[in-house]
Image (cartoon, rainbow, N blue to C red; front, top):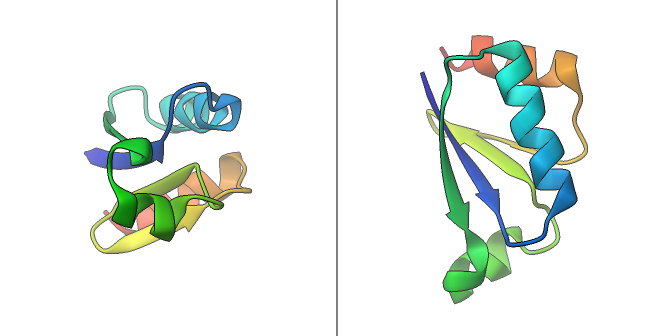
Length: 76
């Protein structure tokens, strides 16, 4: 399973999101995308990061362990 994590340098919430993903599924492949490198991504995600994306679905912060479980299973 692969999940995109929209993030940026120094984002402590993004670190928490990564930890939640790995808690739910230790084998998940996380593709981190730094939004600071793309103006379109900054506009789209700037105030929402961390954002998880998979199979056309997105989960924006704030979210917890149960939210991540539902997100991963709903888009499986």
